[in-house]
Image (spheres, rainbow, N blue to C red):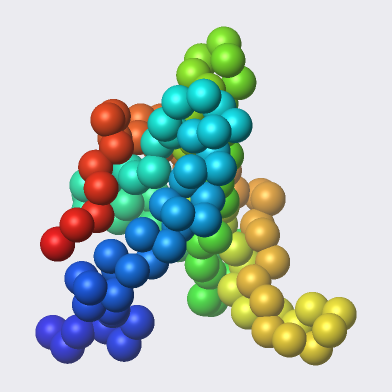
Length: 126
C-alpha cells in the first residue's frame, strides 16, 4: 500500500504540537489553572467501526462520498472540565455560498465522542 499523500514526518508533527503548546496550550493552562488534555489514543477498530457506521447510514441516504469533521469540545464540571473531541458526519462535497467546496454536516447521523484523553498528557516528542 502506498503512503497517503497527506502524511507528515514525525519532525513536522512535532513542530505542529510544539507550536500548539506554546500558542494555545499555555493559555489554556493559565486560564484553567492546570494542564488540559492535549491528546487522545484511539484504536483503529474503534475508528473503523464509526466510519463504517457513517458510510452505511450515508449510503442509505443516497450520499456517495461522506466524510467526518473533527470538533473540539469540553465537558462541564459535573463530568470533567477537560477537553474532548467528537467526530461529526458530513454529507460530502457541496458548494457553499462563497462558491468554495465544503462538507455540510449530516445531522441525521449521530456524532461520535471519545470520552477519555490521555492523562497525564503524552507529549509528542520523537
